[in-house]
Image (cartoon, rainbow, N blue to C red; front, side, top):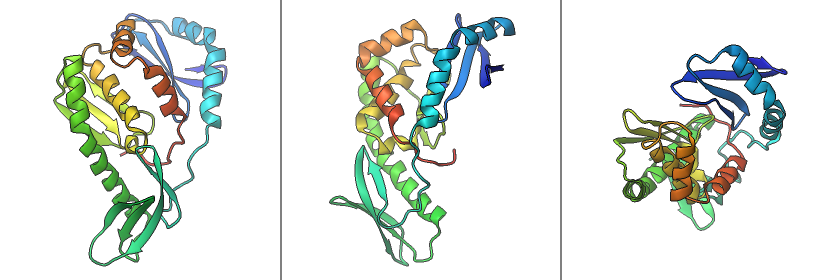
Length: 233
C-alpha cells in the first residue's frame, strides 16, 4: 500500500485492533490489521497517522549509519556498549579474538579477506552473547513464569528479537553483543512476555511495565545506536 508516497507493508492476522509500526534501521512502515479489515479502512487509518509516520521515517533515514567495516587495525569495535580499538595480528596457526585492556586483538591468517575477518569476529560475538544468555534467560523465566524451549542467535536487519510463541522459540540479534547488557535484557524480557501475550496488546504493554518499568527508555536508546551494515543470516 502506498500512502502519500510512503510504501506501507500490510499484514493481516488474528488480532482485534490495527497496529502501526515504523521499524529500524531503515524506517520500514508496517500496519498489522485484523482479518477482514478492508483496504479502505487500512488506508484511512494510515492517512490519519501520516504526519507521525513521516516524522518517524525521516528520523531513521537521517540516523547515522556505521560505515562498512574493513576489520583492520585502528577501527573501533564494541562489546557490551564499550568501545575497543581493533588490532589485527597474523598467524598461520589459528584464528582468534582476545580482549586486552582497551584493545580487541584479532588474529587471522596473513592473506585473510575482509569477509573472513568479519566471520571470525561474528563467531566471537556469538560466543560472547551465548555465554551471557543462560543466566539472563533463567532469571527472567523465573520472574515472568514462562519456559522457553529454544534460544537462537542470528544477524537480523530490522529486529532485535523475535518469538515463535507456538514453539516457544526466541531469536536474538547477534548485534546485541555490541550493546549494553541491559539492552539484551530488555529484548529477552520482551520476547519472553510474548509467551504470555502473543501480540502487542495493552496487556502486553502492562506486562512490560510490570517486569521492566524503564523499557521505553531502553527501547529508545537501543534504536538510537549507530547500526552496523551487515547482511541478514
